[in-house]
Length: 189
Image (cartoon, rainbow, N blue to C red):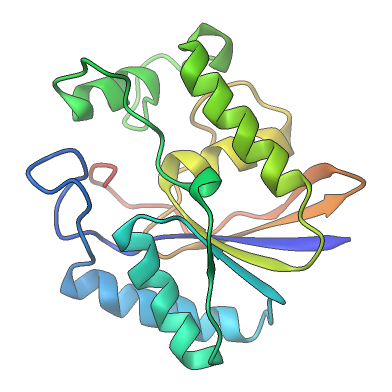
């Protein structure tokens, strides 16, 4: 059995898709990352994988300094891609990934590009061979938890900033071990 620890990045300075295409962590986000690093140390992941996005790299950096190791940067665990032509990313996210209520969306109803992104991430994660910490994003964590729970909705959990969700991987199948802390309120950044 392989253990997978999904760490959502800490609070970002700004919402992605706004004025900054790749925001880093806020002061609160840096404190959250330090707390996650301490918690992760006792879980002893053998490998570290990180989204290329700055807020994830900075969150991973807290653990990298503590463990004196580096993450492998992996685009397949990065942020959900926004289709070309979308002017209001926040509205598009809420319409397709309704984390603040509303009717749930099924992956089958989404754009083929989004389904391809999801399938690439699942294929990558399902081929993981060692206990791994994966520093990623709200929607990406929902993809993996949804697969572990056998759910088709785009949102199945609400991981809080720097929360740690644990999955088990057995014979290529994901299983939920425990959800991390849920976000209290706010927008997806």
